[in-house]
Image (cartoon, rainbow, N blue to C red; front, side, top):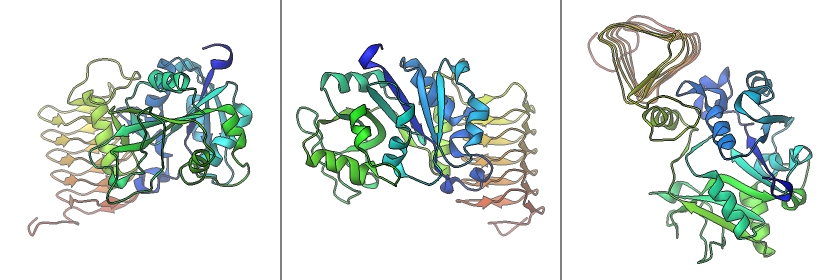
Amino acid sequence: MTGEQKTDAVVLVGGQGTRLRPLTLSAPKPMLPTAGLPFLTHLLARIAAAGINHVVLGTSFKAEVFEEYFGDGSKLGLEIDYVTETEPLGTGGGIRNVLPKLRGENTMVFNGDVLGGTDLGGILDTHRTTEADVTLHLVRVGDPRAFGCVPTDADGRVTAFLEKTQDPPTDQINAGCYVFKRDIIEQIPSGRPVSVEREVFPALLAEGARVYGHVDSSYWRDMGTPEDFVRGSADLVRGIAPSPALDGPRGESLVHPGAGVAPGALLIGGTVVGRGAEVGAGARLDGAVLFDGAVVEAGATVERSIIGFGARIGPRALVRDAVIGDGADIGARCELLRGARVWPGVTLPDGGVRFSTDV
């Protein structure tokens, strides 16, 4: 990609990750371990694989963590620049805020919360062949009611931007990935919050700009909730979601070489066991995400749950659809179900929290 067609990537990673608390109290959401790597690593590897080599990270919450981990990006074959927002600017404002770092004629913008499998080169091809001012990646979903819908005409040109509605006219939703021509970014007002969905895109349509959609049915998941985070991680482990950052065969579990798994433990459903984590005899882990140093004792069951750094699940405890904060200690025979969240460092005594009538 030379000359005028050079493309930069911008990844917006400034969110607070409130829906994933308490895990995001200590680490920003894009840095949480996902299939054994910080979530953002999977996206950066896809960007590099698409032949884009200059990435600007738009940070705000815990901004220093990103640079400490990724540095100049050379380990991933990238050049990474960092721009920190001092106050939240929204998607449009965040894109405008990184303009001084952009080098090319086109900029591909990513939402740092999304796990995707689309062909990035295909989106760029659509952008070039349609001579678009802005190209949106649109993904077809089974139930579009929870998302903003984006209808297109026969040529693929976007005709409207519709907020969440109970009766959507299309199954095409905004997948949070865009390609902008540089002069469009230059027109976004600077120094104040701007929404691309509510302000930038509707204004472009009103003035007759060339806004096109690249529509596919590729893998797509917003990783903002514990349920989606667990499923996305499991999909990476099982090979349902693609990632160039993962080598080796896909399967029912991914265990770090520095972890300990006792004989008779069952690891299924895309379970991840992090560095230095320990799994006891007879434990059953189904779609579990164990961060580094977590311990699951003998006979415990962990299903579709995230166990934070250094947390411990006691013998014969049951943790299902729950989030356990860093360093928490869950006593033997406790039961934590249906969206339970335990804050970091909290200790629950043996049998201290139950949903059944016996201990």
